[in-house]
Length: 106
Image 1 (cartoon, helix red, strand yellow):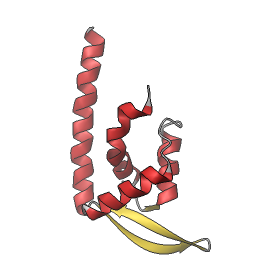
Image 2: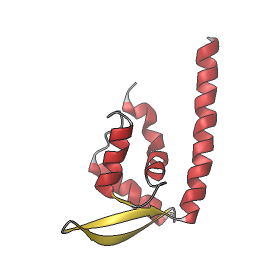
Image 3: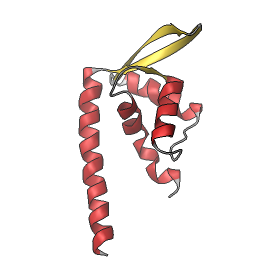
Image 4: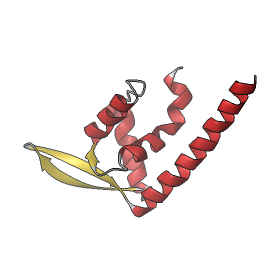
């Protein structure tokens, strides 16, 4: 299925990637790519603006850190982000369940 069918779910994937703790941008992208079996391979020009938008919405916070001699911006969920993730996950499950019901009965 083409990636554009799932393009509206980037925020949910980013929030999910940060559920277990802070990560820098490239690690977030790699995490999503790896766990999705390469199905979600978003370019940096997509990931970073979305991270900045989520931070602006108060769902993420970030800080600069030095990792292995490189300066990286590390993102993490805020309490508001944790709550938003839970709500969006429920919405996705309802949406996917509705699609599955139609597919199974058609």
